[in-house]
Image (cartoon, rainbow, N blue to C red):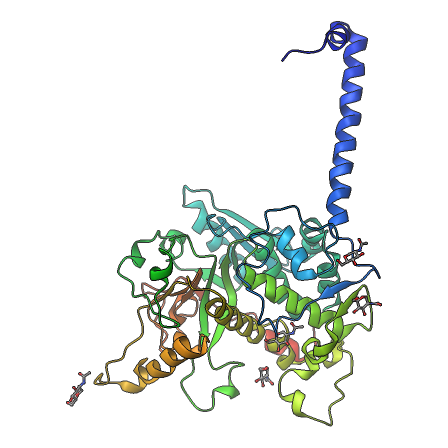
Length: 463
Ligand SMILES: *[C@@H]1O[C@H](CO)[C@@H](O)[C@H](O)[C@H]1NC(C)=O
Ligand SMILES: *[C@@H]1O[C@H](CO)[C@@H](O)[C@H](O)[C@H]1NC(C)=O
Ligand SMILES: *[C@@H]1O[C@H](CO)[C@@H](O)[C@H](O)[C@H]1NC(C)=O
Ligand SMILES: *[C@@H]1O[C@H](CO)[C@@H](O)[C@H](O)[C@H]1NC(C)=O
Ligand SMILES: *[C@@H]1O[C@H](CO)[C@@H](O)[C@H](O)[C@H]1NC(C)=O
């Protein structure tokens, strides 16, 4: 490097060197502050100091997949819309690999003597599953005492998210919300503490490479195949979920929140995935408006009911129910949990996103090797044949990905970059809904069902 003469002179003596060093330090501090304040400026709320919480419904004009992803230009200097803020801070990179990280959470740290022995052995199985491997998987267990530190470090620029987390009136709601937040910020695999891995992680279809896709069947929608529009891209999937429930019986409502319900005790994702963004938006907006009376946010006043969990579900039709009543620890029940943060809302947002994908884009890959239209199959009632026509009508004419698309799954399904695994994958051995056993080649995680969250919710004990 050629330095100007005065600087070379300064460098020649000790005093000069310390002056240069001091100047350099001042410069670095200034640059740090400058870039920091520039960053903060981007997220200054609008004129009246309040941030807009968009609803995740009524999104007909938004392409959720491409939202904000093409804007390589400098972001506008005042972004008062939470969807935009989240997209800027956690941009989605579909070509990246899924981070090789495993996340778990528990009340206390691994080293704590009160850590339950059964969970300890499950948790060690996860650690062992990665120690056996040579590629660089990491394992992290976050105890409750570190959750706020973690949130501050990841979501410090979007304080409303942290506020929503703190506002949730119950620990089960918080535990649900936190798994989405970890995966959205960092990506990897989240799995509940009462689960065990059954196989080497590299055997998961999401990490196995693309071989399984070469013979897979592409399903047309809107009268076309995606490959006619664009050659399909073979990236690792951005979101990997399993089926929790597919109860083919009339009384399914007695047991489950949705006729086809995705499980959220084990999820694999890349950071910034738009499904997680929409889920986080929905939970943040409904939480702030259902629990608090006011704050630094405003909502879409045309759709007030969207923001109030008391209008969701059967209560919506109950005129004797006080819908304006704020939520607190004493009036949250199992129904709320399903539809507020749990598998109910998780499944709803995924279906909404998938339908948005095919309505707004012509290059969405649909792969499903489970669909069967052979009317002469021996056990017609247990076959997708009974759904075939409805599925096709829905995809071709309505632009809706119907739940039937995931009925009776035996092989993974792909909708763009969302991989849906059969019930056997994360829920083997349940002995119903066609689930296989732990020894099935599609079984990857076993849920030991020792969380018993329902009991905890009903006793209102949220320790
Ligand atoms: C933020 O943007 C709005 C709309 O684009 C504009 O009217 C307002 O003046 C801006 N506020 C600040 C603080 O720059
Ligand atoms: C702030 O401005 C937005 C949009 O202009 C408006 O909808 C909202 O009600 C305002 N909030 C407050 C607290 O005045
Ligand atoms: C949250 O999602 C549910 C289910 O799709 C929807 O009914 C509700 O309007 C959404 N609310 C917000 C604020 O996004
Ligand atoms: C939860 O919400 C869904 C969809 O809005 C609704 O059909 C269902 O009845 C609700 N769950 C319960 C148990 O009320
Ligand atoms: C099913 O069986 C009927 C009667 O045996 C036959 O007419 C029909 O062609 C078969 N359909 C298919 C798809 O094989």
